Length: 157
Image 1 (spheres, rainbow, N blue to C red):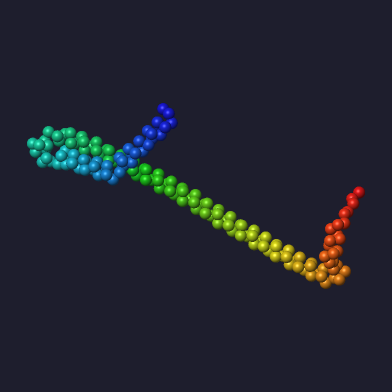
Image 2: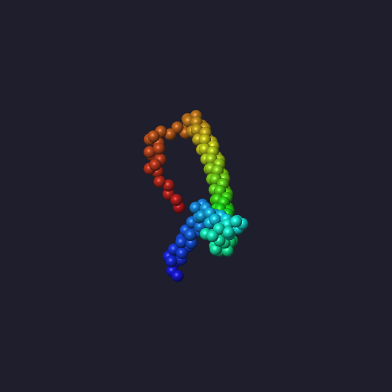
């Protein structure tokens, strides 16, 4: 079988079981079970001429429908249990992701605070250094001095 044919079979199978385990199908199964059990097992019904010949078939039908209903209820319960487990795993994964995101945000905030503190400290250090240079008259350089310094080339040997 090719891949698309296999997927089609799986889709049909899933559709069948979705319908077979639906409330409507279970209602039909239970109605048939009650009717056949009533015809097959109620004591006075077998004496009615209309249903008398069908008592044995109704008993077999009641047993078969009881098995079908039990199987479908088991399938439905198993399917719902699997869905609950999947949802529980998904919730646990989302919780772990949320915790990791919170931790990453806290770490980023801590690093940003450290960088800001270092920048503030550097600004204060620079301001103190600039203040100390301005206080010394020997280091008073003007714009002309800076222009002259830019033109100086250093020869390295």
